[in-house]
Structures are given as structure tokens and as C-alpha cells.
Image (tube, rainbow, N blue to C red):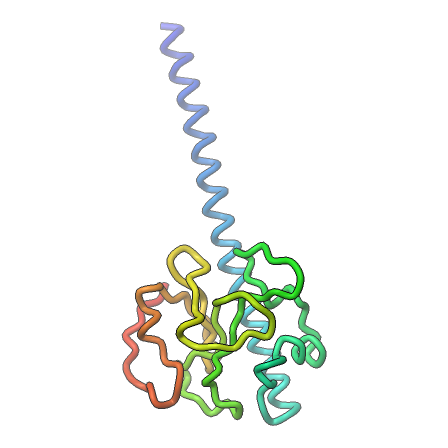
Length: 170
């Protein structure tokens, strides 16, 4: 009888430890998602600020540098929390086909998670699933959505691609 109680207690303790570890892992993923969205929102508001000051978006070849210089954005703001980058390497990419005068449909990709580098600009070939099966995308209207990798082909990158995207978001 005592042996059964000890075995039960041991299994109970192991179960609680495993449950705690799983909750910790889930909480870390939620934290990364939330922090990533917050960084994208900072980038969006910095772009709005820059646009209001200059009547155009920053040059895509130096957009990180210009937002750091003129909108007081931290270098860390350009690195997704899922990546452990050091130095001048960011993970957010501006859509190279985005109209410099911000004259795009609301569901057009503006900034997305993608290939690492500094002052990155690109398109549908540079998007990467940095979070559990997808990535966060900042759209021209300021919305930030998690897009599943299977829905990457449905994203709108140019004015000419306006259509019902059929994207499912979480």
C-alpha cells in the first residue's frame, strides 16, 4: 500500500513538473508573438511619423537607419524576438513594391518577417515563417496579422494584385 502511494505521488509530481514546463514553453511563445507584434506596431507608427515629416516613406535602402535617426527607434526594434541576432542584422523586411507615397490598398503587405539583414527590402520570395508555421505581417492600414505559411501565396504585394485574398489569420 505504501509503495502505491509513493508511486502515485511520484507520478503526480512528475505530471505537475511536465505541465509546468509545457505552460512555460507556451507562455514563451505567446510572449514572442506579442513582442513581435509590438515591434511591428512601433515600426508602423515610426513610418507614419516619417511620412508626415517628409511626405514620403524612407528610402528602402536605408529605412532602418532613417527610422533610428529620425523617429528614435531602437536597433532592437528590427529583430524578431524568435531570433537571437547580434550586430546589424534585422528580421523585418519592407515590401519593395510598396508605393513610396503610401498609396496602397489596406490589405497590401507593408512590412513582414523574412530574410535576415540590415535595411532589408524584398517581396514574396523573402517572406519566412519565423513563428510556429507562419509569420507576422504589417499591412498598409496598420493591421498586424499572423499569416500561416500556406497562405503566403495569397498575400497582396502590389496594387495590381488586388483581389479577395482568402487569407485565414489567427
